[in-house]
Length: 108
Image (cartoon, rainbow, N blue to C red; front, top):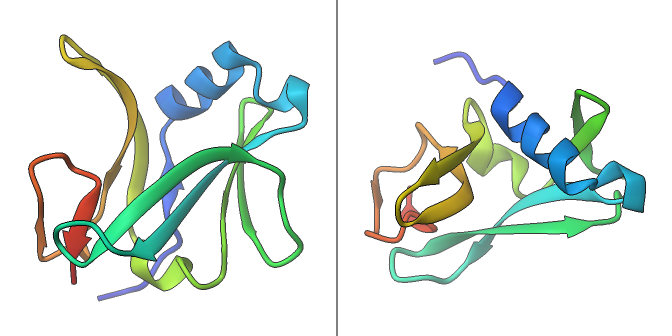
């Protein structure tokens, strides 16, 4: 399978613009860390960009991914969803072989 960098949906960039992330000098950082009930978990925060980050830009906003997390997020899609249970950034990750019910923990 061809390995591509993650992509960010227009809806996710629009939400970042709504909350004024770039106006505060912030970017959305998406990282993968060890832990969670399935082995790995997503960490999603507003943060400052770092020199070794992959920067994905759209609608005047930025999403960054550190070099360690990047292989775990290859071909993934970062989106924003609003449902009855709440609104959040979500990741559709084709590398995950299983995930937990909360959607923030996965295994490869």
